[in-house]
Length: 143
Image 1 (spheres, rainbow, N blue to C red):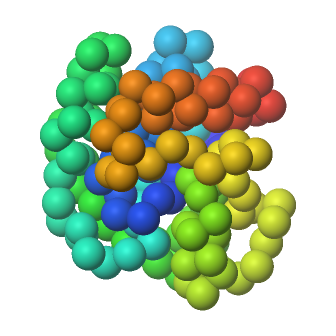
Image 2: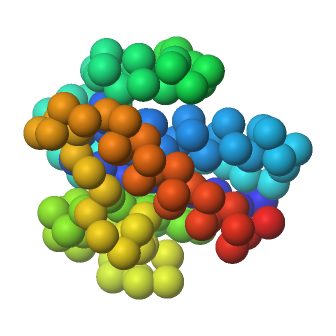
Image 3: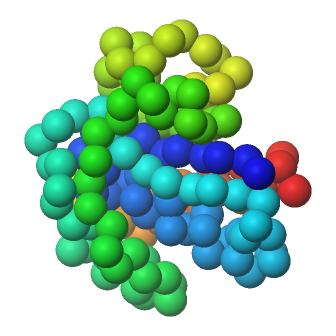
């Protein structure tokens, strides 16, 4: 089983969207038993908060539910718990470097560019596109 953790700043927009997009892709591929997928934040500011409503609506627009998901922060134990940890941007990478051991094989960017942050842009469809691109690459590599 491959265990994947997505990470963004607050775990209320990009990383939970990626979590549920990949879960949906894995389900549609009939590979649910081959993956464990979760998400977390580098910051503590949103701990316990649900997925941000516009992010939730973007997922719902594509038939994906994220019901019950609440934000949590990355822990040192996540390094051992997950096989791959994907971050969304350079800022996330800097935070992760303070929280987890350096390991570019395990801890890597989702894309070769920053994933659009809808918290600032308000463009959740652009973030959706970036996340789908990244999740498709993960599945292509692992299936």
